[in-house]
Image 1 (cartoon, one colour):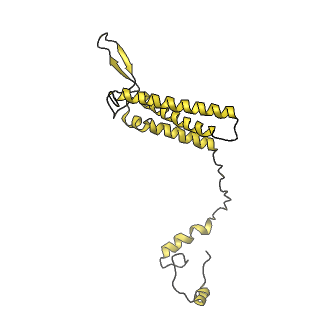
Image 2 (image 1 turned 90 degrees about the vertical axis):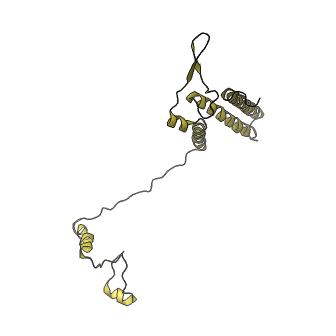
Image 3 (image 1 turned 60 degrees about the vertical axis):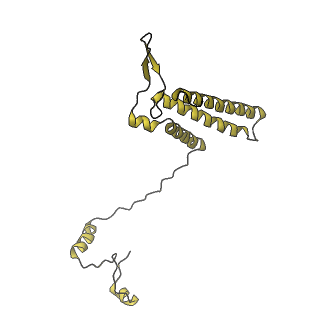
Length: 176
C-alpha cells in the first residue's frame, strides 16, 4: 500500500492512523522498517501455482482398499503391541512344537498372521460386492456379466465361510 501524504489525510478528514501507516511514534520501528530496504531490494519472483492432476479412480479405489485392509487387519494394534507373527504350542503326547495361527480363547489379542488373514477375507468379500456391481452394467457382454456375477458370489461365499471358521477357531463354543 502506498504511503499517504499529509494532504491526502487532511482532504479525507481522517487523522486517525491505522497500524499499516508509514508514520509511527517509535523511531526504532521506523528504522527497522526502512533501513534494510534502503540497500536491499526484494527480488521479483515469478512463481507459478503448481498444477496437480487428480489421480485416476482406480488409484483412489486401490488406496482406499489398502487402507481398509490395514485398518481391518489390525495394523495399528500390531504396531503398538508388537505381537509375534505366529504362535506355537507343544503337543502333550509327543512333545513336538506345532505352529498356531489363531490365539484361541483370547478375543483381545491376535497374532500378526491372524489379523492379516482375517483382513484379507474382509477385503475379498468387499471385492465380491464390487464384482456383483460390475455384473449389473448394461454395456457389457452377457458372458462377461455372468463371469463377474459368478466371481462375485463365490468371493462373498468364500469370505463368509472362512470368516465364520476363523470366529469358531478364535472363540470355541461360539454360536453352537
